[in-house]
Image 1 (spheres, rainbow, N blue to C red):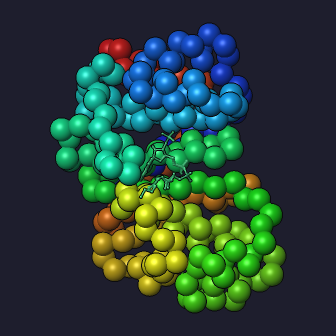
Image 2: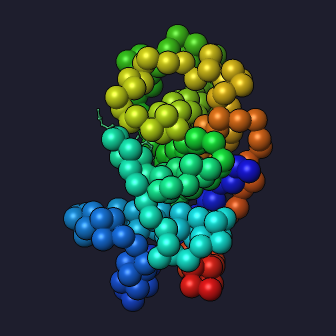
Length: 223
Ligand SMILES: CC(C)(COP(=O)(O)OP(=O)(O)OC[C@H]1O[C@@H](n2cnc3c(N)ncnc32)[C@H](O)[C@@H]1OP(=O)(O)O)[C@@H](O)C(=O)NCCC(=O)NCCS
């Protein structure tokens, strides 16, 4: 079953929460978190890790200490010795999103910022560009981000990072080929989120705020 958890970071972590949560993650991720220059980046990566631990503990009925992650050559994390479970994380601005499924999955969330739409000329296919240009002028930016997050979610499902050039595939042609289905995670005035699934199953979406994540995490991972 495809589930997508959407965490809204509706406040900063308190200092003690920030340090306490770090005790529940791997030293590898902790080392990365310590190297971030900005606290907001460290917080997003920490919360992504906590969110996926909460989801996997719940789904696999495991204790946090039992979760062991491995990484493919391009850095995509997976649960070691669990080929039946796939997940992906994305974070941007005040959003952290995690999708989990029985088949490979990718997710991407992007904050909508003004951008020169000519970027599409370099990275998007003819059909993708037409999709943007055929929409109302005021909707073009959000359509651009819709395509952008579709492409990123596809790359993230494949797990090969940017070694797959963005202009080497067309998400509009891929859509509906029975092996690639795109779902909207959410879309609002400030952000767009897209999920790339390997099967036709409408995702269940669960929205959390920071307090509910921390409460649920404590209840779930140390039962
Ligand atoms: C993975 C990647 C697409 C992420 O894009 P992004 O928009 O910057 O970041 P997002 O917030 O959407 O996703 C980040 C999360 O994706 C996951 N991730 C990392 N590598 C991944 C990969 N290869 N495929 C899928 N997911 C990956 C991690 O959980 C990561 O979370 P973390 O940074 O908190 O650990 C991009 O960083 C990338 O391409 N990395 C791989 C580098 C690479 O392949 N280099 C070329 C080698 S030939």
